[in-house]
Image (cartoon, rainbow, N blue to C red; front, top):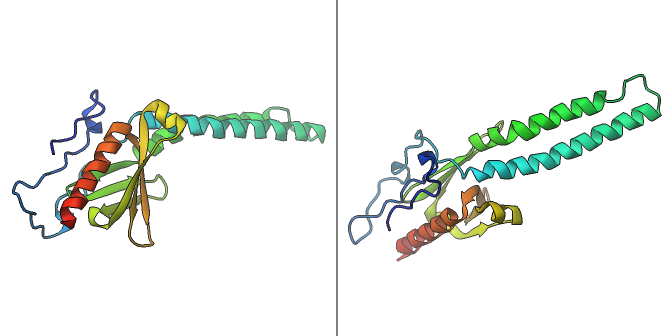
Length: 196
């Protein structure tokens, strides 16, 4: 299989790592599933439109905070509490702006993935960091999902369902739709090769 082309040509850091193909006709022996990926290497970033999707979700949260601030300000004025109108709303506005501007960027920068010939590594989290490695041999099926906003932004979420109960499904959101479909097919081909 040829290397998957970079779906985001303006910036090479978004290009997925190529899936290595065995050079011979038979399966190549490997001493360890961890030998094909350097866990200290940089992660492949998600599609840039994923920042926009998270920002849209943050706008909804910010709007709810602003409405809550207005309601609390109105209730305090009705109770004749000696707090000037707008203090609570002003604080809610500052928190909402922080959530809308800063949090999506931080979440985007904290996420990434690595794909190798025999496994997928997914890293996410700001406060609670999660580094999940999914060996392809444990995958039972793969979903590629798109909501209406994701479809408009041409991104998708790839979900890998594995055997076992702990982390039985691992989601990788923010992939370009074409890349998610290519990754799904490459993983399926690997599983089919290994099962023969």
